[in-house]
Length: 206
Ligand code: 3PG
Image (cartoon, rainbow, N blue to C red; front, top):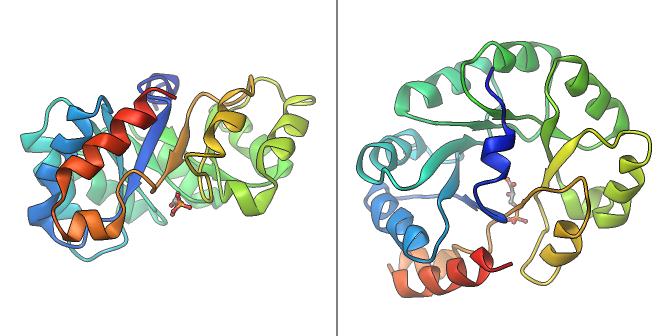
């Protein structure tokens, strides 16, 4: 396992992106880089996600590409083989957590409760994704977790918006937030990369 604090430090916002068509992958990643965002979490929610991941890893060296929505050890291995430089899961099971910590790259396991945070800390990791951040309790929930467990660092994702991001980022146990608002579906499908660059630029300045 590698230290995920390097991943949390790349950008104040990790764009969480679902790409339906691999031909959109490289221009989308370049649009984010042009806006000053050097990281992307590509969700494994489409049949072609691994192909999109491979294309970004090969053709856009300026962006750190990771795989999100990793639910099983097998998906983690496939993502690593496709070129993922970090792995994100929405939650953890004992088997998935054990497999993730055996990988030689940064991982952000998903947690939503104090017990899950403790289980992840026990595995030797202190960086995690707080998911789904909004429905699970938002900034006040994270602030409360910081009292007994100040050494856990979070990337809240799920229901985080441009408007709510600053409140999360102001917390001492939040290093960055994740969100899909940088890559709205109509802009991606319409290949309107200037929109994405503008949203990225705004997010990079948060
Ligand atoms: C995720 O997987 O982290 C979420 O789907 C992203 O959540 P959002 O669409 O609410 O930003």
